[in-house]
Length: 144
Image (cartoon, rainbow, N blue to C red):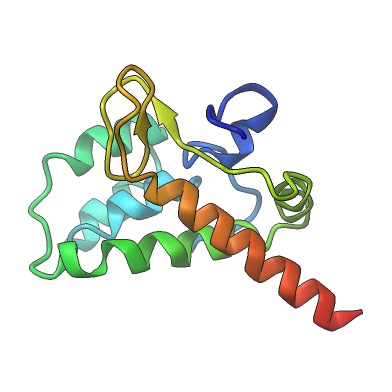
């Protein structure tokens, strides 16, 4: 099991820098995800220029689009699929094998991860990462 997205596993984090323009010019999955929370184009463009930590803070303050709770899961899986088209990240994700991926945290994010203090959480980010890994494996096997 991988339960911390730090150190050699930091590539699993949504804060991990992306190469090129994988996500429409956003530097990380976090920046993209926070930008998609609202319709304001000026706000969205600004999130291309800040750190993922700043993007996350700003995302807590923006006026959410009406359908955000309905689409946020789809936005995240889209971003993760794009992220792992980068060859280096693609290979690193596959190298996790069949390990369970858990977005362990100490800030009580029990929707995307698991609170490591309490063990509570849905681990939706970990589940989506494992789904993307499975999709990559299927695709790679079809190409052989």
